[in-house]
Amino acid sequence: MSIRRHSRHDQSPARRRPRRHRSASGGTALLAVALTTATLTVAYAPLPAARAQPPTTTTPFTTPDTDDCPNRTTPPPPIDLSEVPRPGRTSPAPLPIPSPPIGGKNLGSCGVVRPAGAPQAPEGISATAYQVSDLDTGEVLIAKDPHGRYRPASTIKVLLAAVALRTLDLNKVVVGTQEDADVDGTRVGIGPGGRYTNRQLFQALIMASGNDAAHAIAAQLGGDDAAVAKMNDLAQRLQAKDTRAATPSGLDGPGMSISAYDLSVVFREAMSIPLFAELIHTEEVQFPGYGADPKNPADTEHPGYPIANDNLLLFNYDGAIGGKTGFTDDARQTFVAAAQRNGRRLVVTLLKADVRPYRPFEQAAKLLDYGFALPSGASVGELPEANTPKVATSTAALATPPKPVAADVDDAGGRHDDLRVTLMVGGIVLVLFLLAGARQIQQRRY
Image 1 (tube, rainbow, N blue to C red):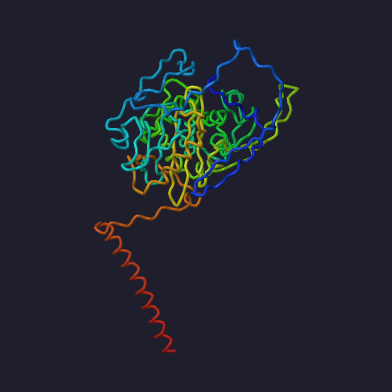
Image 2 (tube, rainbow, N blue to C red):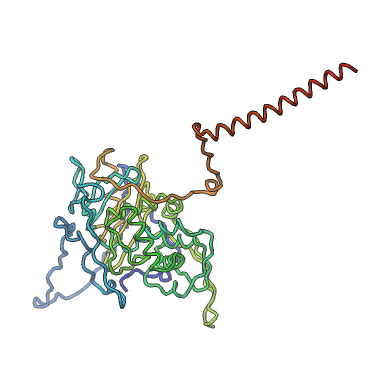
């Protein structure tokens, strides 16, 4: 199994909210915990010279070099067997490389791309590829290997959500299955026989990255293969040409691919769905439990518990809107998130990152600070305009009838109909007028 993260069953249901501190410059200074150690006096005998150990050294961190475009066509080679095709299937061919590059010629570069005159990129970014974009205008502010192909891990759940939120009834109750509970990787804790609304499944999917929730949602779209097909169809309509989902959850699979550019595009599309924007900003919700297994006399009732948002940027960055985390052994750390400052909303994406020298959400914070510091209009490319149908965002919108279309004044039949109506109404009024006059005359005679 490629994912190393623990199941939610292995974690305490309550999560303490990290402290937030605003720096003097308006950014966020992440608090470090100072550990105070007591001075200990230990008596020991020095080791003989022959047994002395050389001092250990740590290899200095260096930002991965992508100038030679090593991932132009495919992600780096896998380190495990997660991408071995199922029996009877073969690995898909690499996705075609669009020419010219989607988003502008500058984004065809594989190194760091920044606006003319802009400062150097922040130090300490271990992500092999990254991008900062304006969520509203679509301007790309800075990027590194923006169209390089990498694995998305659980950030692909953003694409699943963008498909399913436009399709499924949020109030529908779904019964958990053993297949949901047995899925690989991170699980929120869906149990067989448990009853969950689709809204709760989306909370588990987006906030807690539950692969069991992804399985339950995909089942309603026709199963994993059908859900993946719908996800890939949406990616193509969004012009996310570096993207190919292989699983609904982000578990690695044959041909799985995304780019820092595409992840920005997919996230921007999902943010146009109000419930998605609400859920990525939600810190904690209560998740239902499920009953005891009737086939197991030793089993007991499984009570509900709170689930917390696993995106630490939400708790540690001023103006954070929310986002999505991801990790597999092959993908490494992946991340997408957005923040708002002074009326401007930016989205940052990280692919194939490490937890050194900073954790992914801290690297994202550095890149967001960089983007917010750039002047308006500074860009190196743009995100494509969305080409997907929009849905009504409220019951009021659904209940509002469409406005009638005005009649064409050049339509001869329409003018004749209007004339007939006018003559009929005029005739009735004239008859009533004459009758009233006749009655008055008759009353005068009496």
